[in-house]
Length: 463
Image (cartoon, one colour):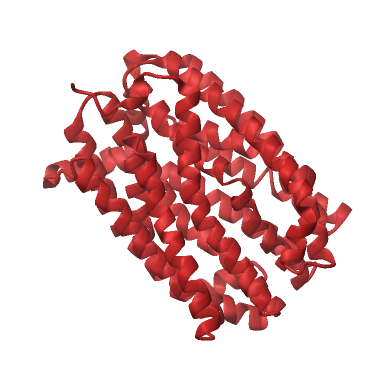
């Protein structure tokens, strides 16, 4: 049957959302958990500058991974829509072109960031020994960005096929590789941050391989594009990838501002924020996975012209997020003391950990609301809407709120202000997404993507 691989066109949507999100989150949380363990190991070395260096480096690594996330969003959206339309050849071809463009552009992007690493770290407030440590750590990891992009795009292609289990196994494998190498390199060989960086590179190699292998073995592989097809696919891919990359870049830029603001309260405050930064994806990995999980469900049904199922999928994703956040917030509150003790947190760091394991965790639901809304924008032909909402959240919803919070409540106010901004923009994105869904019609489902890529195509044709 033409669209036998489009598994989300029928069946219970809440079940699809739950299974895709929970399965994808296992893979994500495997990686996040290793980052979490990294921070524990670094904390055990008993040097605040090391923990602070990881905090600064984390913001820059998020910045570089944003490129891969944007390419993955484009690949997943286009492959899912092609499957929903019953065009298997187009799905395989666009999977191939997405991977090729991702590696090419990712290599150039990585080179530029590697060159300017000291300037980026200093811009966020790193100085002295902390700056030196962060620079050394990042210059080992950043050249492996193309491998990370292969893993991200490959995982998105698998999820577009509804193969969340194998996408999960790719990241779980990377997490296992990292977890095994971390203690060997950090403690066994005494490499400290260098060991943690080398373990991360090895994990990226594993994720890239394990993401590509199932595509060839179980999903028909990749169709090699002709030169003309490679050219034609450029505006379609970039029409989604460009705004998606811009969308993702907003978060690390906003986080960089938060990090720089926190730096005025000292290395202990930055170390405390780094602990919260590692704890957040472990606690809320399911919400981070939710965006990538609901995207293919919306994309397949939108490609098939089933607007009503698109609306139900969006509603069920928000319901799923609410139930999950309530449960995790309760668990964090109960475990707040053991969590703080695990990192030997005291003073300002202890205050920030306790703050996160309470009301700030509950407020994370509105970030989940933003994630789901952005997935809807990207798969309904309005990727620039996710760009504007995410930049709004990380500029207008971060800068004034964080500055006010810092002036009123000190280091704790930095995190409070960031959370309040998330509430405002999460609600705004949800209402905009509902408006987009209400105006969607199956008869014009291709038009939004054509509009996003029109200028790009015009420029390319003139060449």
